[in-house]
Image 1 (cartoon, rainbow, N blue to C red):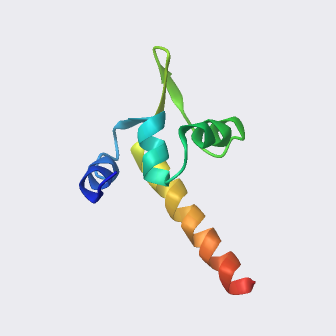
Image 2: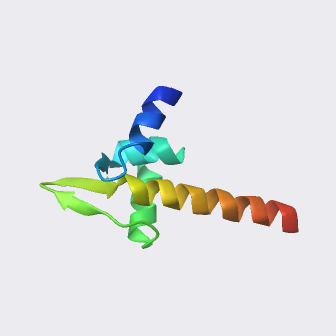
Length: 76
């Protein structure tokens, strides 16, 4: 995925992302996104039969995860 597409996804804070778009934004697989929602790590809602994610919440989760990861590297 290129930077323009990622930027477009981040700049839609009040819009929904599909599971695939959320996965691309987080840099993980679609299956990992499913694991995260099943673990209660990220919120989702259904639109018909599709899982949808709030773009701002996914961006916030990514930021929090990056912050936690950088702290764990510093303390290691």
